[in-house]
Amino acid sequence: MNAVSNGTASNGGGTKTACVIGAGFGGMALAIRLQGAGIQTTVVEGRDKPGGRAYYWERDGFTFDGGPTVVTDPACLTELWEATGHDMAEDVELMPVKPFYRLNWPDGTNFDYSNDHKKLFAEIEKLNPADVQGYQRFLEYSAGVYEEGYLKLGSVPFLDFKSMLKAAPALAKKQAWRSVYSMVSSFVENEKLREALSFHTLLVGGNPMSTSAIYALIHKLEMDGGVWWTRGGTNRLIAGMVRHFERLGGTIRLADPVERVHVESDRAQEVETKSGWRERFDAVASNADIMHSYRDLLGRSQRGWRMGKRLAKKRFSPGLFVVHFGLEGTWPGIAHHQILFGPRYGGLLDDIYKTGVLPADFSLYLHHPTVTDPSMAPPGKSTFYALAPVAHMGKLAVDWAEIGPIFEKRILDEVGRRLIPDIHDRIVTKFHYAPKDFATDLNAHLGSAFSLEPVLTQSAYFRGHNRDDTIRNFYLVGAGTHPGAGIPGVVGSAKATAGLMLEDML
Image 1 (cartoon, rainbow, N blue to C red):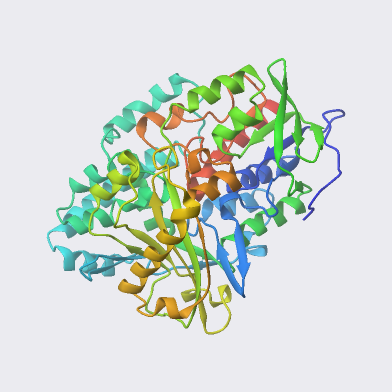
Image 2 (cartoon, one colour):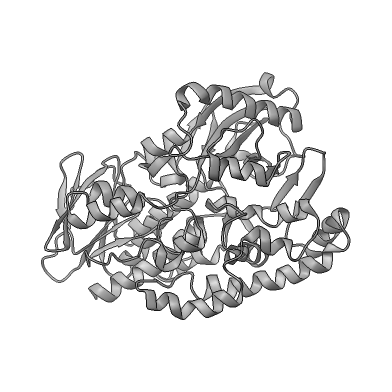
């Protein structure tokens, strides 16, 4: 991997050239598709390591993934290698995770969530025997929205309103205007089961109470494809993508943030970085935050300025507060992915998405990779992170430098109370990552962890377009475009964007 490459990328001669800004999952997936199709592609990344939100840290022998840590639909990833006659196993080892998640409530109830239907039905029966039949109907519904929303539309660009109208009847038939929680509630009665079947939208930045019921497709995605872990961490999946991209002849430039995309005559002409590197390309695609892409990188063009103003009026998903910690000891009884629900569900979601309150209670996602992959920590030790969704900085204007250490302790206290009583005595190393860090390190608007909130009025055509409407050789990829956040979402956006770019360039 080249920290800085001095190779040129010119649109002279016969070889077409492209620049991808940002080495996150979406950016790398797009770059692999372009390079594999014969477009000489350069990826420019501002941070010292590739990955975007899939950054990582190594401290005191522990490896801490920044996220995302849930790998679903591995087929969308293996396709990136297969398209050029390679096998992803050359670069990446995926390990199955069972159960997918262990859900825990304050009253001590545990629910192991997996695609082993016999075991899953037994878990549902423990909560409410009558809901087994309702769950089976929900699974049928989830399969239907998976077919319409993911298989048919997940990697299709929505560039005009006509394309939205064509999709509308199928989405209406699936009651897309209803929320995931509302739809789940129409199938099952038990409140804990309603939470168990609706919390997934939080993993892509959506409020279960307002995110379109189409997102119930995540359940079917997991049931069919499973939940996986990359040996060595999610960072190893990114490293494998970079290795494959370079194998195909691509160039990656690290630790040199893009500061400006030069636009002339409604075309993106050149990319300029902080170091002064400046290069001309036939096409430019941004995997950066959508607001940063328009307001900052394209901000000196009329289109960039106007889109920045328009995007500022949209709803952005919440921030995240993540406590990373390494502990003495091992915990085979703590699942790889654990959800610790708090005493409230709807009210807590209101605090995060509506009122912008930093609540006294919280629900946590606890990540414990060493139960699957001990290589993430020194022998006899364990790697964890505890993640709490919080309102973004536009709603919650606190000083995270001051509040962070207090909130960190409260989260560790809760993990201790629920699972590891002597947690503070066992801590070897710890640090936290707040919305302010997302804003600083990732240029995330308002510190949002997932870009635009995935509500129906900000989906498909109403999300960032994979190809800009005005600057015809400027493209978007990643969470701010269709279909949205999450690994399958951004890899799907890369497939849609690559299709447009290759159609335009070849």
